Image (tube, rainbow, N blue to C red):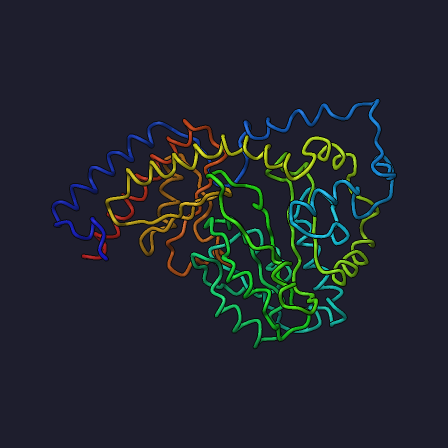
Length: 429
C-alpha cells in the first residue's frame, strides 16, 4: 500500500522534502555524537552488579563443594555454577559445562570442533566439500560471522512472527546433507524480539536431518531478559526432544550472564545430550585446563539461584523498559501515520527490528551518521550483510541515556522521513 509521501501531489512532496532537509540541516549543526550501534547494557545496568565485587576478599573461603576455586581442576566449572546454569535452562547439571565469559566463544569452539575434528564420528567438515549453515534472517550478525570465517556457506531462512519458517528449515535439513547447522536465538531473538512458538520448538525437535552431524545452535542469550510484564514463555527444547522418545543428539544450547552482570566478565555455558557433551568435553580438554572459577564463585554468591537472577533482572527491567517505551513513543508519533515503516514491539531482549521502504535502509543509516547518530550497518542482520530488500535496520536502545536516546530517535525519524520522501520522488522521475 502506498505511503503518505507516495500519495502526495508533486508540489506537496517537494515542500515536504524541503522542510525535512531544513530539519536535517538543523540537526547537523548540533554536531551530535550518539551511538545506537550495538546492544550494550548501559552504565546504570552494569552498576547493578558492582556489589558482587565486594563478595570475595583475601579472607574468603574459595572452596565450592570440595573444589578449590583458586587452583586447577573442575574443567566443567564449579559445581554451584553448573547447578545455577542448569536451573536457568531447565536441564541436568551433569550435562552442563561452564567456561569462560563469552557464549560466542563457546559457539566458535563448537563450530571449530565440527570443522576440524568432526561431530559424532563423521568426517571433519573441512573434508566434506561444501558445508552450509542456515541463518534465520534478520538475525544475529556475529553468528553469521563465525561460520563465514570458516568458509561455511551461510544460507538465509525467513523469520516469521513465531520463529524461523520451519517449512524452509525442514526442506533444507531433511533433504540436504551438506547442511550441518542452524543458528537460533529462540527467545527475544536478535533483532526481531520474537520468541519461538511451542509449535516451532517442537518442529525443531522433530527434525530428521539428512546429515548425522547436523546440530541446532540454540543461543538462548535472552532467556531471562524480560522487561515487559511476565514476558514470553519459551518451550524447553530438551523437553520437546524428550517428547520424541528416543534420545537425539541434535541440540547445542548456549547462554551466559553477559547482560546479567558484566559483559566480558561473566559466566558462559553450553549444554547438550550426554553423548554430545562427552564429545565436546574431550575436544575442549585439549585447549582448557580449567575455567575462571573465582569469577564463577563470585557470581554464584551474588546471584544465588534462579529466583535471585529473576530479582536481579527486575532491576535491569526498570532501566531497560523506559528506553523501549521511548522507542515506541518516538516511532509512533513520528512515523505512525505515514505508513512508510513498521517495527517490532518486543517484551524482552535488547533490540527493535525496523522495516522501512524498499531500498531505504542503507540511505537511512548513512544519513543518520551524517546527522550524528551511529546505527548498526544496514544489512548486518543478514548473511554477508546482504539484505535483499534493503529495508531492515536494527535499533539498539539500551546503552544511551534516556536524553541521548530521545535525541538519537529524533534524528532517526527525520532520516527515515527524508529518505522515504526522496524515494517517493525518485519513483516519479
